[in-house]
Length: 203
Length: 100
Image 1 (tube, one colour):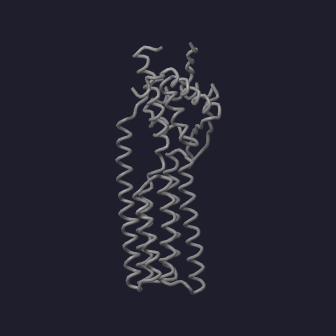
Image 2: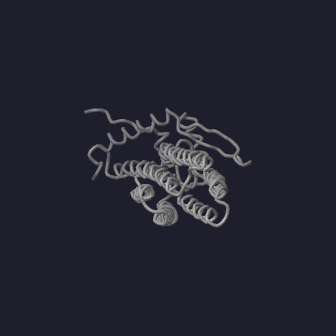
Image 3: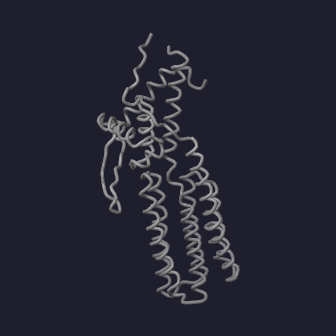
């Protein structure tokens, strides 16, 4: 059999493989900023709809937020490798966004859009997207967000106008702003830890 | 007594092993990303990537993104098989020493 020094060397190789595989997979989690961006976009749309032009507020804000997300995401994507998990995440949020936009626009144009059905649809869609993402990423905090969104969707079906509004504003605050900032802090800590443990500079 | 397996010398190099392991988790990766993950120099990284490419373990693609050149690397099927074989051989060599 091999000697102790050789065993140690081989064990180091095994650890290196495990560390690098984990490092390669840890590349799709820096999306905290998108939650904050969309949280701010929802607040802008709500404020604009209440005090300005309700017909324009949501479509314009959502399209602007989509374009901004696309630009910032493509800049980030150039620095990161493409992963299957990353593409799965993009697919979930893109499909959710298109579905929500199509339904909301159709309801708006047909004159059937109101506070209750819009909060119910947005809550259900965001609940589904957050839940799917949390299961794939094994991120419990995101599943809590999914539950909050589902609760707001259910509440919108039964509660009064004022309660529905408060629930929606609170859900945006916790699931977009607070969760987004938490995600950004968690990612920055992970990056610092990864940088501290790096260095395989020789052949 | 069964014969002990030999470790693939192309993969056994620390940096080459790290590069192949990194590429298992991604579909394709850029040169600068690989450099940041391994902490190696441009010259050393380029030389080791070339060895892996010559062995047929990785494939290289060059493209332009926002007018800037990008070199992308991805693991080939042969590379994946070679790394799997390497891990199996490594575990056989270590035998009972794993988990000590």
